[in-house]
Image (cartoon, rainbow, N blue to C red; front, side, top):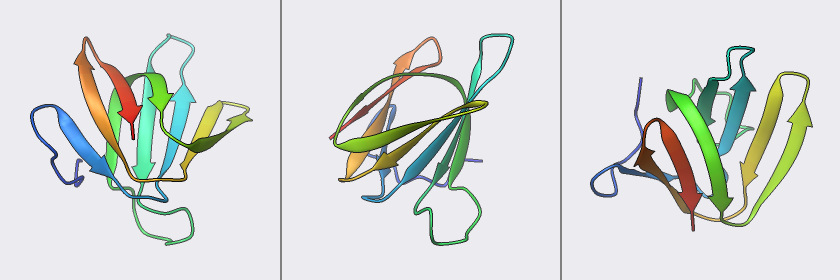
Length: 90
């Protein structure tokens, strides 16, 4: 499931108030679940298996028992770096 708007080869646009829920599995993989807005009460826009390596954009990060939540504070793009590694850039 990936309903994110494309922004070029291996890049997708994130909403200015996107939430990225990162579940860290015991096996070492991560499940990234992307919501357009935490308050919208809509299904996720995308789910990806990989690793969120870095966030180079204004955001708040909070730890959870199973991973962490990235709350975007500005528009950004999700970039595929290959080998299931992802970076978020403003």
